[in-house]
Image (cartoon, rainbow, N blue to C red; front, top):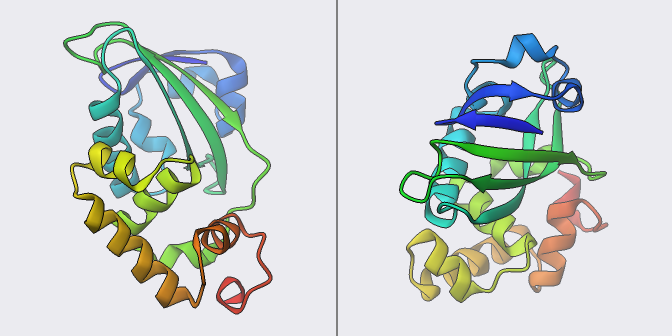
Length: 174
């Protein structure tokens, strides 16, 4: 568990710091950016949470994070904001590691493709994704269709199997 103000870590419990390979003192007053694989991931998640994380509400997603030794891992993140007018001003987050492999084949995706895939993986519909990202439903469907074609996949179930690394499909072996 971690308490943050404006995405700066203020307090952590030992389980949180151990998950990332740090001591609690090393994380206090550090930006959450330290724990993301790329700055673009930090920005993307911030934008997504800003739209869905108003005061008193909780929000959950699944994402890849980075340990101190630069290894990547999947985790489920749940957060609760304390101040409605400024969701990041005071918030509590809980990070749970997930037993899901991080596969390198996703590294060739654009940031928008990663964003849409992670929302599909959460079970969101094209309409819900469109609303969350400020896109049209047609744009989301177009991104999904282009991903399917580029990977040689036939449907969303195959896309999710590829994304999670479960498919024995040519596209998952590059």
